[in-house]
Amino acid sequence: MTEPLEAWDDLTARIYADTDFSPGGREVALALGWVIHRDPGKGGWRKAAEILGADRVYRDRPRIWQALAEDIPFYDPGNYHYYGGSCEGPRLRAYKPRRDASSDRCLVSDHHPHLGDCRYPVVHGDLSSFLGIERDQSVCGAHATVSVTEYDPVTGWERLRWFCSRHKERAREVQAQLRAALPNPPPPIPNRGGVLPRYFKTDWEATYAMAVKQGSHLPGVPYMWEPPYYGVCRDDWPVPGKTAIPRKPRLTVVS
Image (cartoon, rainbow, N blue to C red; front, top):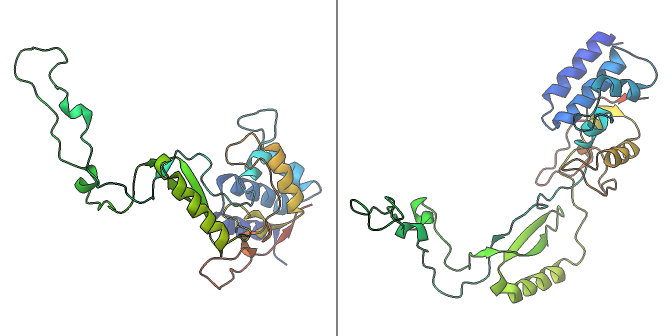
């Protein structure tokens, strides 16, 4: 039988070596590990909450909920705060680099005439050519605010395709084509959280649901949450492009 100190050292080493942990999730794991192996007894969650102390933003709430919220398993498409994109509609006319209006502004003074000769910014041409980037002459490339969501048929992950106001009709055509090709996208594979169930066994669905409720004021926490189709543990999620299933660490029951 492993001694409590040896078990604590082993668990701590595995937690710190696990790069999938969020900072908050690692805090919870270390607190639970300490309670289980160094201060065993009833009320593991309550003792872990006492160790982590108060919330760093709302002092009337325990820190453990804020930390747990960082390990909530869900799919984050990463496009909640987008500001548009580059239009991928067909180009309507040949591309010509725009001349910056500031290039015609005198660097010496806004008041003319002035002493000495005027000096103007040196223009080196299109920034894309300056950076060695080949601009695609077949697409519009203008700033776009109309988006069409494309779903991956394997992972269910989202990709936004952008169109400007001049290509709204093209956006509707692409949307119709995508819906016809994949009318029922598969459930998305989660890409966030789900690390704590690797190490501890408890009712994680209920625990995460409470973390969502308590941490709904935090950035990155979903307002509405349901257990992922593939489960709450990251080790149970399919890995795109890989067939090997990662070895699951030993579980420890949390009372």
